[in-house]
Image (cartoon, rainbow, N blue to C red; front, side, top):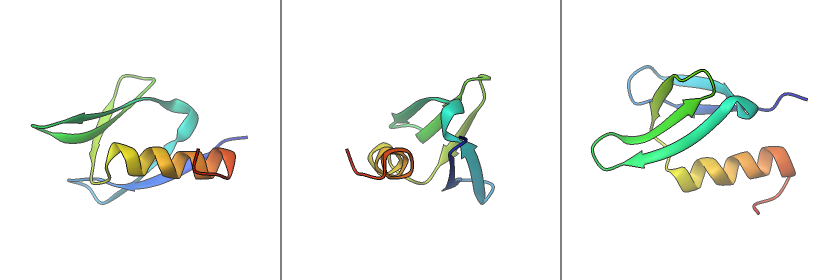
Length: 65
């Protein structure tokens, strides 16, 4: 099963990620939250690392682990 998550980007509006392709979610003081995927690309998003993690857990596990 493929799990998708929609996030708001800083520059382009909304973007959809395949959760299984996310490799790292990183917060940097200079650039904010960045989501890196397994192909090496990254996107700056508005949500915090904690918010994204909580939403991923809700989608994948049906809980807020």
